Length: 282
Image (cartoon, rainbow, N blue to C red; front, side, top):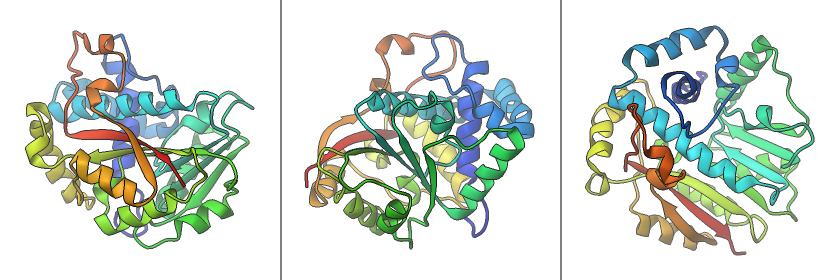
């Protein structure tokens, strides 16, 4: 991220969630019904780009990536957690979509201060009020104090939380990732983490490699290069080192019911990034 500028990756992810409902046919992998509203005046142009070029591996691949990971993560929430922490929230709309008074009772969105200011400006412009229970916690993952920010946001240290960390780790140094995991490992026993991570070249499938050949260079050009890659075994070891026990590693294809991948459009799963689900054991 360039200083004092919001994340372009967050913009592209929100546009892809919005475009999924317009460009891709049924069955939809995930329904983000407020992404287009939050994008406001930019929505038409961004969705239009997907309409015109949506079969390209980067655009179709991004739509598959952001919707599949969201579907997997939000399915875990259910009514088991009263606290939901969204690390690198970007333009996530869960807190805006959840039923008033419904679980979880507190949603803490953690992101770079510039991105959070931008999101709040977009919410105001779109007439989207900040719902009860939503708290913004501005943090720079490379240099900020995550635990202090969570405490200031009202995280209850006695109750388990679900933490999502999607579309972020690949943009951070391994030192910043380890520092974040050290904080998450101190959360109450039974807290869960869903983390997306990028695979090294040798583990990518053909579609993942094709996607990477375009996307990684584009990310670097906009000032947000991919910095970290993990094998499942290496990430499992790092998580365990910080008090987090892996439950599963999930390919994109496994994030939703297999029937949702039997499609007539351009949406296909790729093995470039995976999700890991881990439980705090401390």
